[in-house]
Image (cartoon, rainbow, N blue to C red; front, side, top):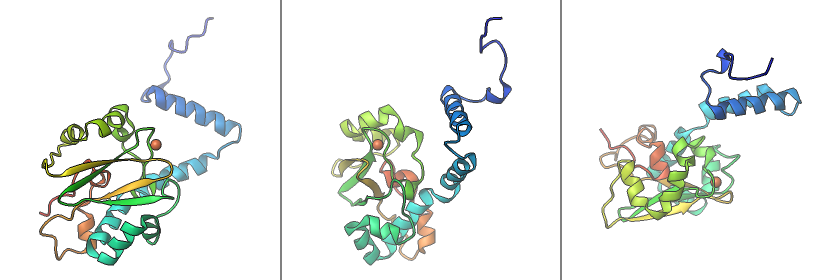
Length: 206
Ligand code: FE
């Protein structure tokens, strides 16, 4: 009987995309050959889903807004300042913080692939890894920002930074007005992931 893998159902796979199926197949082979321990893989995924994420970057930004000495340190040596909060490790070995001002807006891309500051933002969003964002961010940043719902005054310079394996960037958005007496914890709630990539601003104070 000729084999056709489409002629019967795989209910356990029916919800998976072709890429997910390939990943699943690759994982099975690696596990079968003893190259990876499925428990270790699960632990890494669990870590990036729950412990590591944009809430870390938000804490860094809120601290920079609240503490001028920390802000200075972050400007001078972002890797060390961020590591002082316990945020260090893969894809965060060399960090730079980019401070937005009234006249300068920073935006981050990786034109080559998908370099991203995992230690403070977790895993990158799908659009960050997608060819359209990577191709257009440098060529037409204002058009890209408009698609994210962000239109900046013509007087604001938009500076686009291309991430590499050597350097990852964290944008420090401007502190929203009317938050002078806010605690760091409350401030952190205004710091969105996109504001730390530069495709958004921090949320306005309510
Ligand atoms: Fe990359």
